[in-house]
Amino acid sequence: MRNTITHPGADNLVYEIREIVGVANTIEKLGQPIIWENIGDPIAKGETIPAWIKEHVQNALKEDKTWAYSPTMGLLETREYIAHERNLEGGIQITANDILFFNGLGDAISKLYRSLHPTARVIGPNPAYPTHSSAESANADSPHFTYPLDPHNGWQPDFVVLERKLEENPHITGILIVNPDNPTGFVYPPETMKKFVALAKKYKLFIISDEIYSNLVYDGVEYQKLAAFIEDVPGIAMRGVSKEFPWPGGRCGWVEFYNRDKDEDFDKYCKSLIDAKMLEVCSTTLPQRLIPIIMQDERYYPYLKKRTAKYAAMADTAAAILGEIPELIVHKPQGAFYMTVVFKEDVLTNSQKMSISNSEVGKYIESLINPDFSLDKRFVYYLLAATGICVVPLHSGFNSTYHGFRFTLLQPDSEEFKRHIHTIKQSIRAYLDSDI
Ligand SMILES: Cc1ncc(COP(=O)(O)O)c(C=O)c1O
Image (cartoon, rainbow, N blue to C red; front, side, top):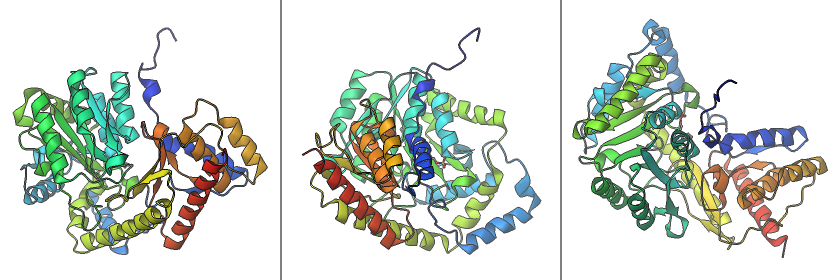
């Protein structure tokens, strides 16, 4: 090329949750069946959509207007419904004009960071959901700033580190919260949310709160959205239908802007997001049509309650089994459908192994593993080759300083799930003991 055409930040776009799929596919071809525990797609894991939801979709498809473009910001009646529901919850009051639809939150996330001034940085949690951390880092062409969620403190954020980083790095202009969190399943208590808002006020920052799992909080866990705490701080909340309906293939999510009128620059930034969407015309119409219809159906919230009860039961099972390994830090998630366990410091080494019965698979995986691999990725590759269980390493997969792995709680059959967790437990034991 006469000029370099690749963006300087391109190498920062990494998504190990899907990258490991290529390795698993090869292993499968070599004869090792795969148990997919890496991707948060309930449908792919065998969850079925209730007939009443499908009927609503079929009915919506019978109307010609469902086939049309929607307004750039999204269907007005849907945005009015969302604003109304939000306002009933208390906290900040919004209107339909504070809501902008995207083709899934993945689309929203990439546009949010791409529209930021490259020197305005957003600090996010460690472990990080890679779509956020990669997009932020790519836009700035610099490593993503993170604050620790502390596994030694139930995944509570470490505010001492966060504030130190805010002081040391004046380019940080926004704080990202993922609540409930992916990958930890942590739910931010009200006191914690208030601390974020206080810091944002003190350092004149805006807050992004990814709330895609907000309707999947487990029974008995206290949860309120950013809207309840934001006061007059500029903020953006993100929601979607991928995990809730669940309809990940529907590609539908939205953002809610809070306090556009409180800061001129924030207002201009929000306008730039709307303008960018206008160039694209609009986002997908069909799921937008269905949001008020499905969410107002009296069967909707009982259906979600049933699903979250199942995830909570799976989390109990996994926490009980894996909690027996003294080298692990295990916390039961409080929402969403993932669980993350962390290896205590210094328990992983570069010489541990797992016995792999399929010799072709063994040869293949050992040809991939190299000394530059993070220690948890090394473990995850051995686990995949030896058992077929595909999980995601924390260090490389979630931009984390911790070593561990994330798996999903989506297996429809609880006995099968238990068997998988027992296999993981035995494999960890064998791996850790292999170099004693
Ligand atoms: C925290 C979080 N935000 C956003 C997304 C992206 O969701 P969507 O399917 O709406 O693009 C995911 C998907 O796993 C997620 O876990």
